[in-house]
Amino acid sequence: MLVRWFYDPTLTYEDNYANGPFGAFAGDDAVLAADSPHEVFLGHPVHRPFGIPAGPLVNAAFCEAAFRQGFDVNVYKTVRTGAYPCHPFPNVLNVHVEGQLTLDKAGAPLLADGDLSRATSISNSFGVPSRDPDVWQPDMAAAVAAAGEGQLLVGSFQGTHPAPGVADRAAAYVADHVTAARLAAETGARVLEVNLSCPNEGTGNLLCFDTESVVRIAAAIKEEIGDLPLLLKMAYFRDDAALAGFVEATRGIVDGYAAINTIPARLVDADGAQALPGSGREVAGVCGGAIRWAGLEMVERLARLREAGDGFTIVGVGGVLTADDYSALRAAGADAVMSATGAMIDPALGAKVRALG
Ligand SMILES: Cc1cc2nc3c(=O)[nH]c(=O)nc-3n(C[C@H](O)[C@H](O)[C@H](O)COP(=O)(O)O)c2cc1C
Image (cartoon, rainbow, N blue to C red; front, top):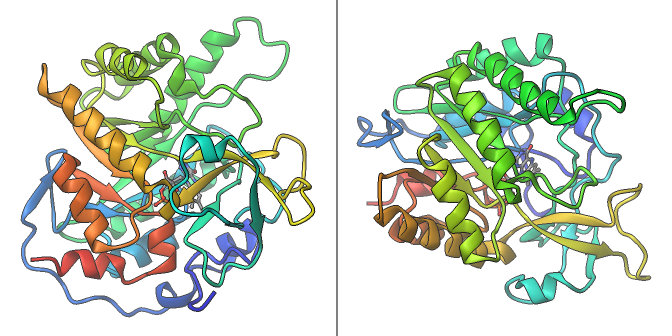
């Protein structure tokens, strides 16, 4: 890496959690304060509806630094109702992709290695680790408090599948989402996001492709959290009819959608062997510059669906490496834009977006 990333992928997740953030996020420097907030996101005044999505900001220290550096809408990394381990190191590899990662290309193995010096597309294979709520609740509350004027902290959570032997597994899974939402709401977060799109749990099917279950889960969460805005974090949908059905079934329940998470692909080393160690990790989520097309296309499709019927909020995520990428997603209909890989590569990206006229 030419610049040390604030989440340092050459260290373990635990090292990052205990000792980060690093690089430009490590000091107390702040970018110059912007003028009064001049945009509104989900009812909250923000300087710019731009920030870092669920993932790289693993705790309050990272969130505080992101706010200081001019990222105005940031998501605290996805939490669960109980402690959950991280996949073994490494988690982030450089993924070699020629141009954009089309679905065709993602159907073939991709070379991945640890040389991140010029990476623009990476794996993120963590398995959604979580602290116990006793730890993350006060820490998320500190992250909420770290948002200055014109800034907003979003709390991300997801459900955990019940242990083997639990009788009504579907009901238990819904109930776990509801508990996670309640615990996140108790921190004072003013917007919540439920992750329905994790490709890193060793299960082939993403929750967001099971509309019936999502409706049950989203309705139960909303009953618990009331007026607190809820976003659904989605994967890329291949099928237009499936996307339309998903939005039709959920738009009356939730406040909006964040898309996309990652594009899954089989990652291999130079010998053709599995690049990330351990079972269930043959396929990993790829993010960064190579998935820009998919984030943009999903925002365009969601914006078209929004035209008919009641409105909803769209958060554009995926492959945003520059301020121009931010502008393209806004022009396509995104109410807010977020960058994970791009922000790690360029910690000044928040300041650059703030500087847009
Ligand atoms: C290090 C890292 C960890 C991530 N962890 C999560 C997570 O816990 N929950 C989630 O919903 N998405 C997670 N993501 C996915 C991002 O939120 C985002 O959807 C994805 O990286 C695409 O954006 P990008 O191309 O700007 O990286 C993670 C991404 C990265 C890079």
